[in-house]
Image (tube, rainbow, N blue to C red; front, side, top):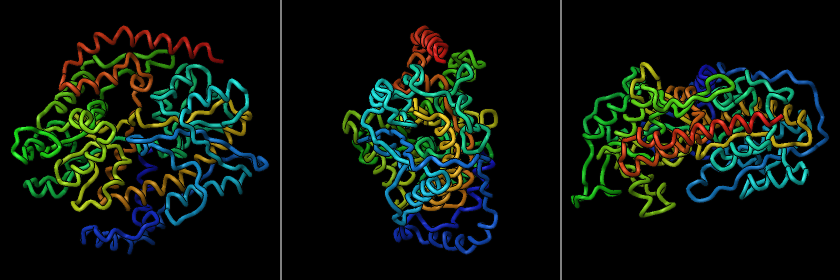
Length: 498
């Protein structure tokens, strides 16, 4: 995965026009100059482009049939998690849109299949209704894991990927991390592949404000800090304390003041994961083991919760949610734009929101307690990520064929545009972000305990931050029995599935 991403990013960075838009005139002059310099080398870079290797599949003609993906309609703060990678009506000059259009045209030309999408306000309800009626209305679902995806898989509404012909999980267009963490008893009901951008969007990262870095006298090259394994939670705390300030002098630290680190309550679990912690891990195919209280995991969790409880950390959910309910994201974005936080924990889809920000920013992986030991693991947020699951389609053979071919073509088209144009060029401000994206996407985490919601432990971890509570041991003591019962029920459910 990491090697593939490095090749793609190195090959196409700056080699394509921005995603259907002219260069931002408000961008700093040095940024525009860097872009122009890189464009000069585009031809040379293009020569090293990753060769397109497609799966060895037999010729098929599906007679112009529709291949229907059911996906959720999300609103409010979740609107950023809506799919944009399945179907578009026409080319419009925007690179990502046009890549989806061309990939679907390829599918039609290659095997005479029409890629279609059904937008649902309740995916779980519509799938259950379709399966009950036996109408074979859908072939594949995009199911939010925390809103029915796992539950549907346990109740037999999805097909086991391992029973489908043509699927090859060893290929680079499948995310093996997801398969290894979520498959149980030799069965895989949920998968992540390169058709999907939602899981890329839901991957955690950290932005840093370059102007603030300079204004407050920091001489750190943050990219070198990462590469030298010094991007730690202690480093975040140390730097944060230097910029923390009650800007309006009212003695109340709120959205009008300046912080070193800000993030949503989910950041606590993200830093726990980056530091090597896990709620639970698979212990072979037929067992799940709770690991939160293992020495390494627990020390990572304590460090994460302690950072979130620091005065110099702004917990966006804790402070803004009581005031603004579902509108905390826009206020958080306004704070970062106004140079009110040196670091900002985000999900990757947030990067696009700052492409016209006046102050320069950079992208970093999530910090870790001890990067030399654990590295930088960037979790895929289970509140925002989708899983691609095959429902009880009328034609499992067609489903396997279409998904393998579509994922492979997406690897070289849709995801390539997303990584190289929309992230590496259009949204980021420097070449070094390429290496950081390599780390972020090359070390993604799907915590088995979080995705299967064992004992609600993952949710309880992030809720501890709402009270600046670092006593995770007491929380676990209350949740452990429930978590073990959840594990028993999961294996009982999967055992009953053919």
